[in-house]
Length: 130
Image 1 (spheres, rainbow, N blue to C red):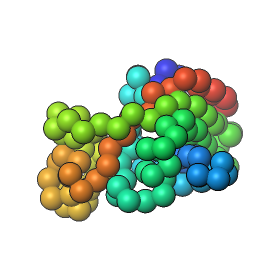
Image 2 (image 1 turned 180 degrees about the vertical axis):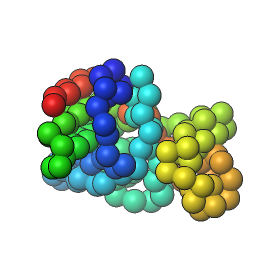
Image 3 (image 1 turned 45 degrees about the horizontal axis):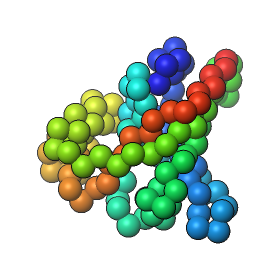
Image 4 (image 1 turned 30 degrees about the vertical axis):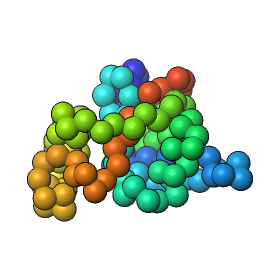
């Protein structure tokens, strides 16, 4: 995500999805980001994933503080589910590089396993401050 690399990001972000009744659902998430967007992984049957399948518009917030001056990134975008083996391998390796080998142990390898759902957030708007 353009501009994100200039900020020190926390280990997790908050993902906001839209519940069936229109209310927001905010969930802490691990993530990896690149120049084009954000990848996330989750168990398939959870409410946030059901929400994304029904309504792919999302918002993601990352904040660094309070010890440092407040820095924040807000990304609004659209979630796109990924199913390809190459995507699972690339994103899996990025998660393991970021979060450690415990991910490989949990997943039984370096790729995102089929038991997990993988999606990419394509930004439509990014706001950075701090």
